[in-house]
Every structure is written in structure tokens, then in C-alpha cells.
Amino acid sequence: MFWEEEREENPVYRVPDDVVDVVYSIRCKCLPLDHAHSFSRAVCDALPWMETEAQAGIHLIHGAESGNGWMRPEDPERELLYLSRRSRMSLRVPRHRVDEALALAGTVFDIEGHRLEVGEGKTRRFSTQSTQFARYVVVPGEIGHEDEEAFLRWAAEQARGLDVRVRKMLCGRAHVIRHPDGELYTRSLMLADLEAEEAVRLQQSGIGSHRKMGCGLFLPHKGIRAVHEVSADQA
Image (tube, rainbow, N blue to C red; front, top):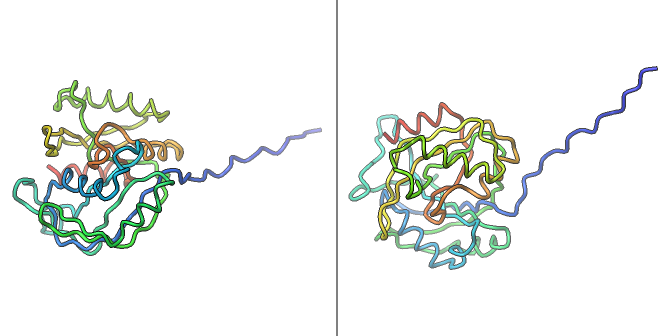
């Protein structure tokens, strides 16, 4: 007789909602190209708990990338980032702060003289997409900001500390963000071939410092080729 017990199927992974992104429509014509610090201060003044919530983060606002005859501005001292009606503002918040974050609708921020009106917000759970991308990860002070290999070793160690296995990882060119205490040297970072749980953990915890200035926050991405295209746009 041949007898084989039915195998128990792996349960479907359900994305937890203990940390989510709150995504808002906005009305804003333009912002300073480097608005990280001024935007962070405005949001934290309106939501003081942001600064003490370890898993909270403030995504920077982005316009279009270079393409179709339009060149993205690159001079943070003088140039402006022009936004479209499709531009969005996003905050990463723990579940118990969602209602307070949603109450931000109707707030008007003054970002270095530019008016930003916050519209209605909606919650969005994290993605299980296998490729995750952070535009800005702060390079630790003990690592030379031009030492790409040292940065990758450090980033891999941080990922493993989150129980994220590093299979494919790529960093992009360096980017400088203005800060009153001194410039922040950052690099973009992509991790690919992640399991669903790993992708979510990476979004929940992030890598590196200055999450309230848009750094270390991961979002789903199309893949390695698209990351190369973003790096080329930023070059």
C-alpha cells in the first residue's frame, strides 16, 4: 500500500498594520529642491510625537524624474521643485498614531515661504514586493562618504540585524542633504530578491538615521534596471 499524508499548505502571509504609511493629497505649486529639514520641522511642530516614535518617518516630496525633454533641477541652494496635482505627501506612522496623523488634513505649512496645504489622507499597508529602494540612507560618520564598499558592508550588517537576508544589494551615487548641524552625506540603496516578510520588516524598521528627514525609508521598486535609471537621472 502507498499512503501519503496531505501536506499542510503554507499560510498566506498577511501584511501587519502595526506600522503604515499615511498618504495625503496636497496643494502646493513648488518647494525648495532640498526641503528635508524645513519640511521635517513643519511636520514635527504639527505632530510633536513624531520625534519620539522610533518607527515614524517623514517621506520627502518628489516631483518627476528627468525625462521627456524635462530636466530635474539639481541646485538645492537656488532651484525649486515644481509639483503636479499627482504629487503626494506621506508619513510613516505606528498604528496607534494613525488617527492623529489623519487629523493633519486641512493644515497649511509654510516651507521656506512656499505654501503647502495638506489634503485628505489614506492609510496604506506596506508592500511585499521583493525589491525595496531607499532614495537616501545616511552614511555613518565613521565611513568615508566616498567609500562605496564600506557603506555596502555596513548596510548589509544593518539588514541582517533586522533578520533580512542580503541576496542582492546595490547603492547609487552620493547625495548631500543640508542640515543646521552640518551636511548629511547619503546614498540610495536597493535590496532585491527579498521574501515578503523581509520586505515588510525592512519598511517597518528602515536603515540608518534621520528618518524624520526622509532618510532610511524603503519603498517598493520595479527592480535593478529601474534603480540604474534613477541613478542615471540623479547623475
